[in-house]
Length: 130
Image (cartoon, rainbow, N blue to C red; front, side, top):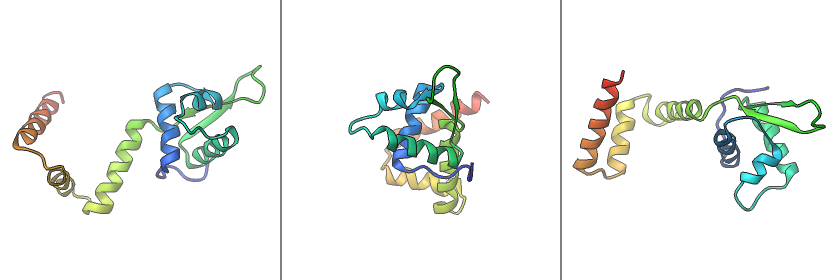
């Protein structure tokens, strides 16, 4: 394992999403079954799995009596990856300012006053649950 917590390419994210949705170990065949068309060939998937392993996103193992089949499991959860990605966006694009990042999305999404009230209500609900 060379690096940990790199970003994922679009294809790598697609594969990780499949693993996250499966939510347990999966072999290449399991991943390909859930892959949207056009599906990659098995050797291409195997290459991506190797890259994901080297990046520290997955681990693999073999089950006794299963021959050469490798089973993959996510080492980084979807929630962890989302958090890491958003932290990076906040740092790289907004000078590490959550306020700037939030204001950007509020303005760019053209939120209505009602949308903003819903957001505030959601934040207050979350605060109550802490």
